[in-house]
Image (cartoon, rainbow, N blue to C red; front, side, top):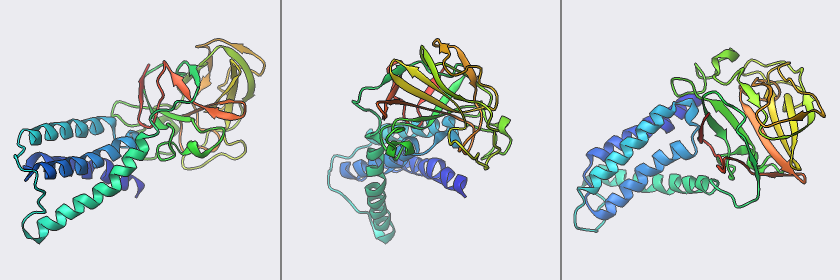
Length: 297
């Protein structure tokens, strides 16, 4: 059911109304603005709020390109009048009112998501710890609507990272039980900084979705001290961690492999940074990553 809702919200509805936008000649400039906001809010919701890794980033980019094409086409057909028209007949009137209502719901949600795309708070600059492919952020940013960690004092700027496979999705299947069907499972994880290992846990088992591990929520994890900042990397594969507490590491040193240990729904990298008991933003090459941010390494 969850996947059907995602497919509807992220692909079917945006695609349907993008085609409608492309074929429908605006009755006035005011109507054109409504049509743009209406269709744009649906496409924007799919990219800003929706998890693109579930329905393919390639489909998402295609819908976005089609929306831009529809916008340009409609822009070339603008009438001179600004007079807003509800339409002729009750069906057209109901549809126009529906556009207004949907825009009033989805547009503020998109704006709320966009408010989390940047932060002025001082953070820590790290090296991206994955180095073999295309990666996508599932949860990230400075707003709870795009990053559920944002309500936590210590994990407010935490990131959950998955890998994209050749189909543009994070796994072969909707939510497969087999761990090796997830593109990121078993990926090498490297130290994001020069520092010292503060804490290590290695022996928790990898859980097959939808099972979750008991004990420490982070499962197998490494905590690094990086210039007075504690960086936690969680959900390592069982017995894959190759460093020990008090050991010094350099940026790029192998730490272990991505697994599915601890309180996690599927294989991914969880990373967050803490200074003085408060979560701080993480930046990679000065980029502040948010939901659906892509990193090619």
